[in-house]
Length: 402
Ligand SMILES: [Zn+2]
Image (cartoon, rainbow, N blue to C red; front, side, top):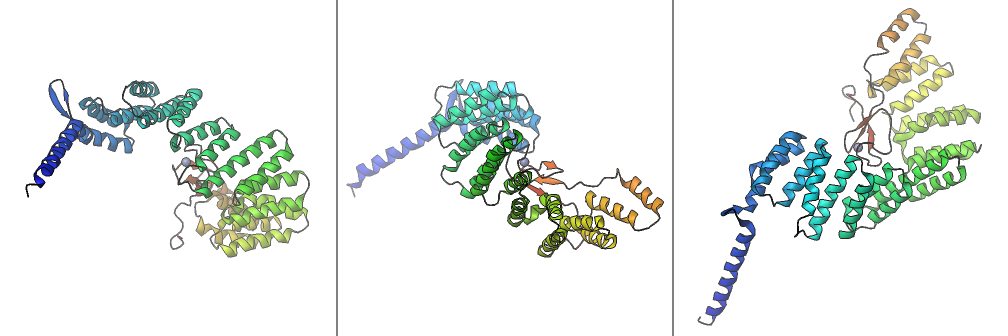
């Protein structure tokens, strides 16, 4: 029994040392008073500040975080978040000052240094100081090469400047990080490649543009805009068969985006003396997805143009329950009704009365940040994410919800 005595004493001493160490870490002496450092983070002010921040109530967030920060001015994360709150409020100068002051602290770890620099880079970006922002993010990468946030921000800055080659290079670096989703990265690289093709196209460099669109498709078989653009190039070159093939590919990989090529295919089939193909094409889409109101609308327009007004109206009335607020369907119905020998004056009056009514012109919404747009966008102008837009149908008729 006595043999355990020294061992127990050592263990006891160790334990005491640990507790004292922990306490030292937690409490510190300031102006003759012991301050509980953990408490500053657990103070209602800090938690309230974070709550307000999440709810975008920035003034209240700043007030609470400032209070929490005054309890323990050395708590790094409180100052970091406070600076971010100022940035979100648009007071970029204050945000920059706070974050720059944090960088002056002598005992920052490498990782802390990197985090503060990310905040500072975001401040600069918000303030429109692109070069300084880039510098800050590059510095983060020197301190922490795996810092995904810094890489993502650098990519966005390049994208905003339309420096697509650089954006692609940075995306490849992100793709090589651990735990990355290879499919998502390939898809983003394909969108960037497609943008490079568009840049060539704007400079009338058709050959290089086509090659970029092809390599975008190689990167991601579902790169819809690349198929559409490649088809456009082929049509410009007079190779209509190949143009049609590309546009049909776009529909195969993303039937829900088929409407992007309706006009192109309708004209191309007509030029090829095969207008029946467009009807068959729309029918196939409707069969595959009975809720496809856009295919019905396209076919209805096609039929009405060919004089088949009554079948056209039937299709439109079939389409309407799937998108009751869709302005484009209503507009087509007005057109068709005027041609069906109803009292033209009455119909015209209805058309005039509803022309400025609130209908929704095919709203699209970003699934990431809820940004709304009347047209499909491949990159969100607000959160800069790629391919996040879905069509938003407002209040479909009862019983028809998917
Ligand atoms: Zn967005």
